[in-house]
Structures are given as C-alpha cells and as structure tokens.
Length: 152
Image (cartoon, rainbow, N blue to C red):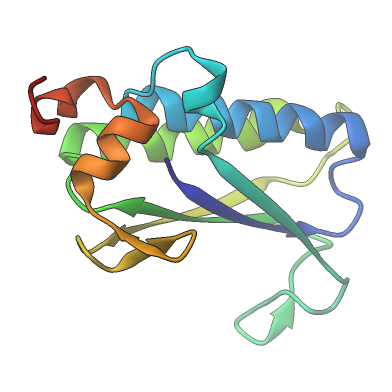
C-alpha cells in the first residue's frame, strides 16, 4: 500500500509508455509488498507522476538530461512491511519498470534513483485517522502480515 512519487523528464514517457510505467510500478509494489491479486487491494497503491522541465534536473550543477535519462521514484511504505530481501527486490523491480516502459526511440542511458521511506507506525494518516500496521495489513492484504489481524 505505497504512495509512489515519480519524477521523470518532460515528454520522456509518452502517454502509452507512461500508462505502462504506472502498471509496472503497481506490479512492483504488489510483488515486493505481497499484495494479493485483488483489484480492491491493488487500488491502495497510489502513483503520482511529475514531469520535470528541461534544465530543471541537474547533476553536479549541470543539466545532464541530454546525456542521460534521470528517473526518480520516492516510495512511502508503512514500516514493517518490507524486509531486506523485499527492499532489494522492490528497487530492482522499479528500475526494471522504468527500463521496460521506455520508448524504443530513447537512446539516453537510464539513470534511476529509488528511495524507500519506511513511515513509522502511527505516523500515517488516511481519511482523517491514524493508521497502524494492522490497518494496512487488512486494507492491502499483505500476505506475510495477516497474523497481525484480530482473530474472529
């Protein structure tokens, strides 16, 4: 149940490629966070894409966008959802999502940066209420965290 904030250079991913990127980012989240293949559970993954104007993305104070294609994903996930192995998988899947979604005409080398933020329990609000890890486990259906749910 992440919030994924993406920054890409303006016009780097035309409409159909952007749609493919969003789907692949959702698939990456579901795999790494063990979210079941249920549209209600998958709808908990929010992806926001922001396009950066030419000249506004610099590396070492130089606009590198003519030489490389920088792509950034900042992912907020509840603390306790990911372990070391799932974090590594997540980063690889997000990089692969960018790579597989590129237009065939893109010649610049891809340079991705993926930042995983683990939001401390009790620090995430949704719809006016504080959510805790069991709330997320129930809403998103995290397969590995179902033991956190109260027994009926």
